[in-house]
Image (cartoon, rainbow, N blue to C red; front, side, top):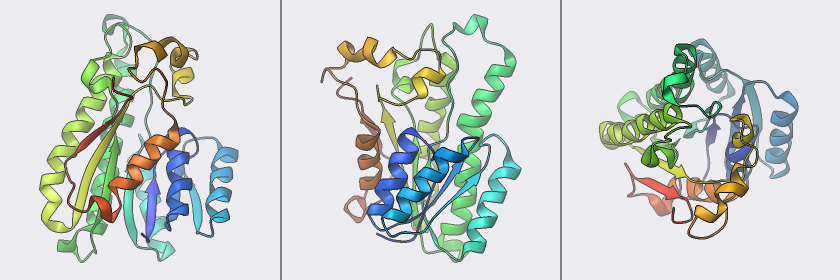
Length: 248
């Protein structure tokens, strides 16, 4: 595998694990991050330690102008975009829908749905063989919440990930003849910092017993599934949504 892999939200968690795994697999890596300069720099350093080119671009997934800036810099880099990993996303504090503000709902959908759609749009414009590209892969990060619904806690987050599932299936069909494969992964309980950002730092320990495998997953395990989906071993796989959930 080779070319440039773009991973949004690549400074921590699953995004960081994807960046490092991709570099080890032979990709140059561009990652986006919203605020943590030091974390992003550490991931770039790990990419470079694998003898690949790495660079980080500060960008808010909810701002279209930031997304266009990211792709402009990729165009100027001279590297061919081979894969997009739509990883950036947010979760808010646990709440029933009746108590959610319109501002929260708008931010959730802007970051988790519209942002990935715009990233995918720009990637397709560069990858499509109809537009002179050489093809490529897109992997969207969904969540098992899309199947479970997130009742009493994260209905907004679950709904946003349900939209990602639909985006994956629809776009996969739309661009299948243009040399682009589009797939998704649906992580379950994964040991990352997203739970703390949702106000539940102990959620992994609390939910462990609900997982048939009786353990949480790791960011590296999700990254390995993503790397499979963009590899030649998955060359006939598109429109697939793979659960990485320990059987839950």
